[in-house]
Length: 124
Image 1: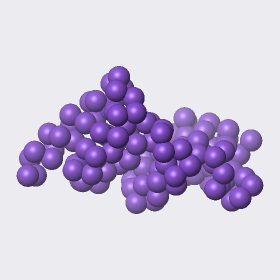
Image 2: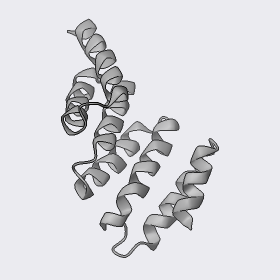
Image 3: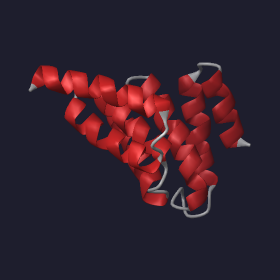
């Protein structure tokens, strides 16, 4: 129920409350969030943290989620978006290439990649 309350709060734009419920959900999982069942909770918690501009913490959640499910294209895309928001377009490009390798027809990842490549070219 904690995970669902976290998602509901996230969808309503209540990111701090969502984060609290999602953290609670992770604590209730067997193994303290190290099980595969933690992956969706870690992903949504990362989104909450990203929305609150807590980028480093968001990346930590995404990285934990990727350890549990390395084939999650959406999580790689979330890493790319977060890196882009942090002003790290080179790292964003790498993450978005991973996302597109896993799901080549993902329009959002393609758009994010185009933006990251543009920003990376401006820096280089």
